[in-house]
Amino acid sequence: MAPTVREWVPAVAAWFAGTLATFVLANPPEWRGTINVTGRQLEWWLDALPTGSVIGTALAVPTYVALRRPRSARPAWMAAVVASCVLIAARIAVPGVHGLAEVTTLHYAKCVAGGLLLGAAVAAVWVRPLSRFALVAAVASTFVVAHTAHATGEASVSTLGPPFWWLLIPSLVLAAVCAVIDTADVTTATPDRILVQVIAAAVTLAIAHRMLGAWIDGQTADSELQVWSFIGVCLVLVMALTEFWARRLDSPFLLAATAVAAATAVVTPQVARQFTLEPWLMVVVGVAAVVGGLAVAVRRPSLPLGLALLAAIPLLTALDPDLGDGRSWLLARLVVLGLGIGLALGSTLPDDGALASLGLAVPLLSLVFTYVAQSDGAIAIYSGAHEPPSSTPGGQFGATAATHAPGSRLAGIALLLVVLYCALAIRRLRTRPVPRAD
Figure (tube, rainbow, N blue to C red):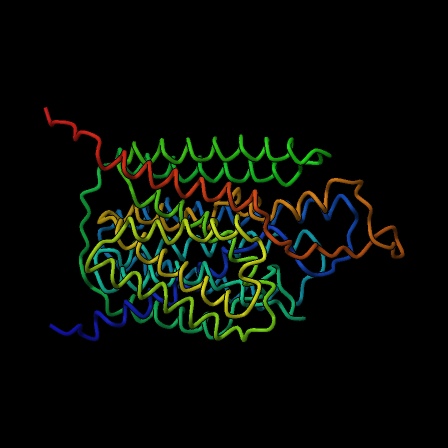
């Protein structure tokens, strides 16, 4: 039976909501732009950028849990309306603020609204197969291609620039329409114990990635061996925590999402610094690949193939760090990555929305993988003394964040090991004995 209008409208609303939320939360740790602040204020601001993104992303999980309690989709759509309004208000307000405290407040408000929107979207549509497909495709593809949005001179609190109006307005309008027409009752059988564990997983993973990512970013050792020793410890800790929660929650989706985050981390810097390709071309290729892989996986799960394609991305980086900088090679990498993402996520999609909200949040809060992929740049920037740019009157200076640095062979090897570890952990998870019910 062909989908009705009442099924198509929530699906389209889910697509726009997922795209907008991911674009808002996929905020790189670096920030390109100039602000007149003191050195201490600059460090505070650069710390606030990833912190806000991680807080907002982690908030998506408790948001889902709270909006599932009414057992109706309407409260979720209303929350999506509120979140969209906050994002619109933040975009309008940014050009009029001048103080660093005001800008930081807007950044946190924007991130919280993005997390609220993501959690609300999952709560509203996860029980509908078509809308679920649209939401996962939107989040996964936007996570890959959001970095094509190179910030312009327009005022923004993000490297990617302010959210586009063609995302903001449809998200608001469609969510409002769904809040009126979506009268379906939604039931969930998720035990409270699982809901509490899912929230705990989101919080602990967010804290771990933020703290360990900052630890990697702040390394100033002269020895590359020492730096990579720190990185290895961080990766071991993150993966141990991830597998712990995956086993507790029996969630291959969490591990598949972690593999997606690791593989994507080596591609997004190349997407961000690619100016010879039209952004729309990279968007079309990336979105089509993710949607194609997801469509295949929904009909015929192909998890091994998806993980193999994901592993090929960091493997190629380990063999040749410059591979992908060319136009044709980058498009080819986007195809391989997109298909791998679609196959991996589509083959492990959970029926439980709580697990889905956690899995969709993981790539957005995986800062450790981002810092590992850009580790060469972090070492080059911070290994010496912090020398400020030329001073301006009043003891302040205009600070401009560094551009993305190319990946390294060691980064490719490290992230390849993460993907392989996720594959082995999924295999162990699926082959372990099922506990008998007493």
